[in-house]
Length: 356
Image 1 (tube, helix red, strand yellow):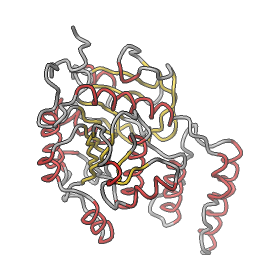
Image 2: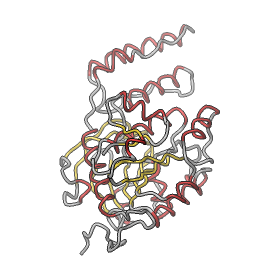
Image 3: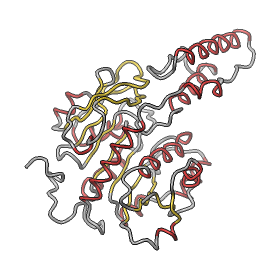
Image 4: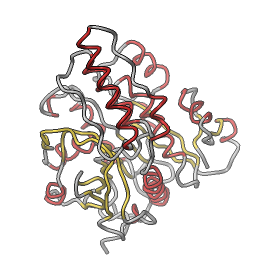
C-alpha cells in the first residue's frame, strides 16, 4: 500500500498533485494491512528542507507495495533555522523524544550543510550521534545519505572523510560490485547516481572498517555500502533521491553567489548532466552575467524555462529499486510491534542470513 497522510504535512498534497497515491489516515485505518513506520531525520538547511522531505517520501511511497507507510519527519534543535522553517518544523515535525517513545521500523538520515572544518565541531554532532546510537540498537535498518554517511563513518568506525580539493559534482556511472546482495537484486549492473560533495570516504576506508561495498564509480568513488552485518546501516555517498532539476537548481544558486560576489570564480557545469545545447545556452548566460557585473547593471535571471526540457533523469529507476529492496527486507525482518529491532529468530549479527 502507499504512503499514509497521517498529518496535514504539505508534502502529502504536493505528492498527490504529482500523481503519487497517498491514503487519507481515516481510509488507512479501515484497511487490515500491516503498517511500517519510517523516520526521516531531515538535517537539510531551510531552502532544501521541504524538497528533501518530498524526495525521500516519494521514494518510499513508490517502493514495495506491501504495507502502509507512515512517515515520521524530525530534525535536531541544534540546527540553526530561520523563523519560517522553525515554525514549519514546530507544526509538522515530531520530536526525537516522541520518535524514541513510539519506535520505528526503519530510519533515513539526510545530509546537512556544515560550517566547521571538522564534523566533530558541528553543533549537531553529539545529538546526531545520539540518534545513530539509538537507531543501531532499536531500528531494523538505518539509511544514511551523504554527510550522514560521513558522520557515521567517523563516529562509529573512526574513518574521517577527506577533502578532495574540489567539488565532485554531476551524474556518474556506477557498477554493482556484489550482485548477490539483496539490496541490489534486480538492479542494472551499471547505473547513474548524482553526487554533490567536497569530501569523500574511500573504498579502502570502508573496507578497513569491515564494511561491504555494493556499488562504486571509477570517477566518483563508492556510492552504496552496508555495515558489517550487511544490513543494519546502509550508506549512500551520492544523491539518488535528487529530482531531475536538483543539480540545475544548485547550479543556479552557485551562479547567484558569483553574481553577488560571494565566490570568485564562475561555477563549472555539473559533469555529465547538461546537454551540449543546454551548455551553449548557459555559456551565453555567463557572458550576460559578466557584462552586467562590468556595467553595474542588474544581473539577468537564469533561463530555467529554456533548460528544463533538456534535462534527463538517469538515476531514479535504480534508486527506486534499491529502496524497494530495502523496504522489503525491513518488512521481513522487523518486529511487528517495534519493541525490538528484529523479529524473533533473526540474528542481529547476520540479519539477512548471508554469512551462514
